[in-house]
Amino acid sequence: MTVLDDRIEMAESSGELTLDMLFEWLEKMPVPEGYKTEIVGGHIFMTPQRRTHWDIILNIIEQLRPKYPRTRLMSDVRIDYPGRLNGFASDVVALAEDAEEDDKGHVKHQDVEFVAEVISKDTAGNDYGPKKDTYAAAGVPVYLIVDPYTGEWHLHTHPQDGKYHAVVSFGFGEDVDLTGTDVGLVLRTDDFPRD
Image (tube, rainbow, N blue to C red; front, top):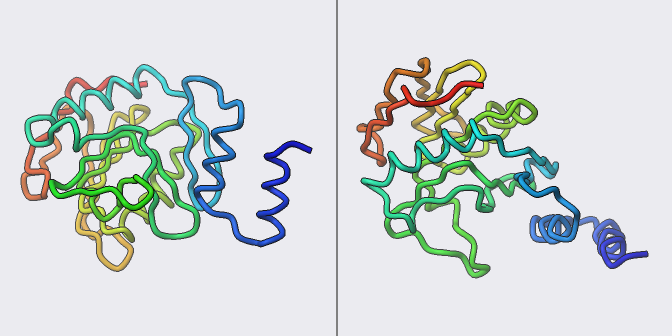
């Protein structure tokens, strides 16, 4: 029996899994290079990073740079969110100016001002479903879904009572107007590639 098996048995006997335990196990597993790993509602998801995916992520990050210094922008970094075992590695995160790490050195979800997720075929249901609901419950003010398969983007704002109360959707080529939000910018989408 390996050390990992011992830990799984201990977790099962205590009946309590934690995100730290799950991520520790993932670090010891042979996750293929080039895959992003997240935990959504206690389920582990691994998705391959594609060039189209990365091109859109980098495009968004570059457009956010006039407002956000590099130290307040992240991609694929674990952030724990409320709910049962939600440790997301969002495609793009912009943090508030006064953002601080928690006692474990992790970013606090309360400091997230903006999240963008670029759809992958195998995990699209998470981005449109449980992750969207979790971001709303956490009070993330701006959540942008970019779908290279449909060539559309979906902007979710005004989180309250666990739901986003404003949704705007358009096709690539239409600007994402974030001037009425904490982000305060307009994102151009005409260069977003399609899959």
